[in-house]
Image: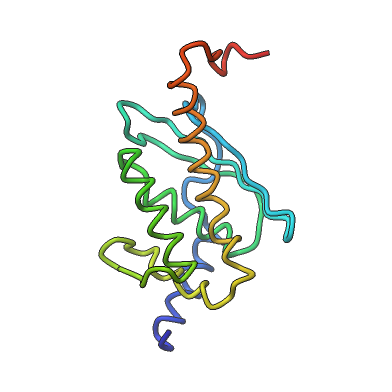
Length: 158
């Protein structure tokens, strides 16, 4: 990573930590999940409003290190407006970049490419991926409910 790329990474992480985008709660989420990283204490909850297979709105809440909060904030910007399959593909690509199985691709990742430097710090990869894991759990949980016609809708569960 060049000095300029490192500066951009630090600038974006600090910006998103100080003023996270889409932080808070949705009035009526259709999808939601939480993630915790017990090793460092990060906790993130993700709430989605999905309509016709597209992320209409997304919020996250919780607390964590700068990398966790910045990555979750940037994730919300990146997936808002996308269809669920596209959001899942973006998560898979982002994860592959952070785990060094793929090279960063700015065309695919956009501003998220600035977080690719996290892969140099293996202990921080989980921090950067926590919000993304919660997002995938929220999507998968709802997909599982839709696949099971006998499942009780969340609003009717005890």
